[in-house]
Length: 288
Image (cartoon, rainbow, N blue to C red; front, side, top):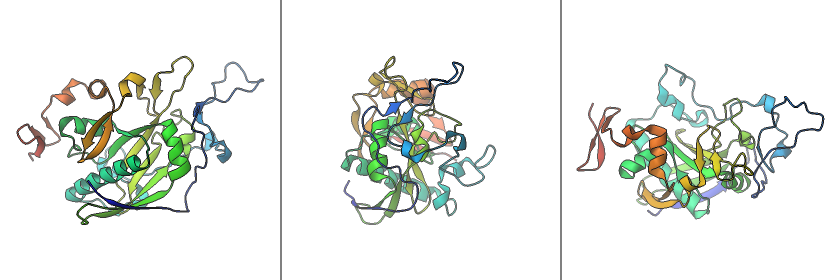
């Protein structure tokens, strides 16, 4: 699908700065006087230590509108508060996510940034190559080396997008979480490493990076800050496919990963969230 894009950099916000593309995940050596009982320092992204981040001051970077806590409307948790102007309609949500996926995947492909779809987004692809109709955001993954390049070259980039039929126009912000410097989970506020945000309504793509926390003893084990673990053979070679009518990549062992995360029921159940799967048309049909 063709689209027109115009890219610019905006000059406010946290700048990540230069990052090394090799040996990204390291652990700083403990001081000679450190007690044996002290926990090891967290693994970090090299090249960001000039920010002098104090882990004890870590706070949540990406914020969602107030009201998405337990018991409230979960849909509010799928907006970035900086660009939130109220809940969008179901029609606008579906249209916004469709074009956001196209703009995201095209941007990453054109800039040779490797990314693949993950989690619930991957499950939607498994069924029919589309987002699940009840999904309110998009999940993707990258390697930490890709995250480093994103931070160095594209942080705070705004991309202007025009659909092929020129009827849909949007601007998307690529925002890197500065706390991505620390590669462990920490207090749990910053498990999302970056976002691709629709600046008209706050809907977004969540981007998480995979790191090798113990490359010497476990060189094939990759993990995100939300404790999802993978082996290299689970991911590579990535498979080329189509998603939301645009080229995309998925993990090599995609079905095994989906079963591990969601169980076999997710690949067999044909009624969910007031939708029923229609195999004739290959779509989830709203039933209520």
